[in-house]
Image (cartoon, rainbow, N blue to C red; front, side, top):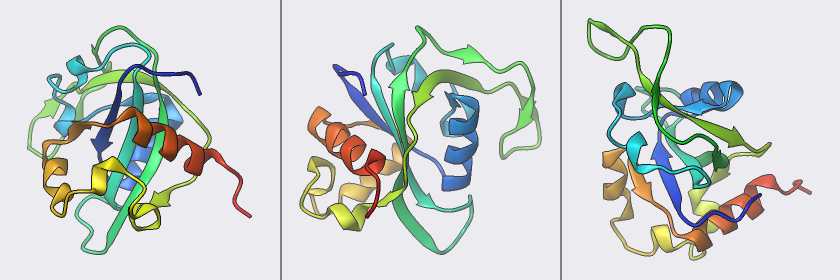
Length: 149
């Protein structure tokens, strides 16, 4: 994986992360542009998935996809989607080169990530996107892209 200068953690359910990775794009915060505008070409990006599906009660709490941002700015999708409300919107997206990887439960990395050092680290996830230290990004990439065994 290339050597990013910055890295980010986006929050979506695992099924949404899988769809995004299959198409090579990300969308966050119900399709809004603001957080996506913070990303730059070459930034590292990982998805944290609190659940398997949106609305699930059963927690997953895993980092589910990882890659590198490959475009220069956010763009609107061609197709309109319903994003939680009753109206259709064209969500904003960024292009990401996702690496073949496997989900890693955050508990498996206890004590190994700057992200989880604070006792209430989960509160920062409610914003949908947060900076991720480069050390954490590289550690996640290492663990997620290695062959289990």
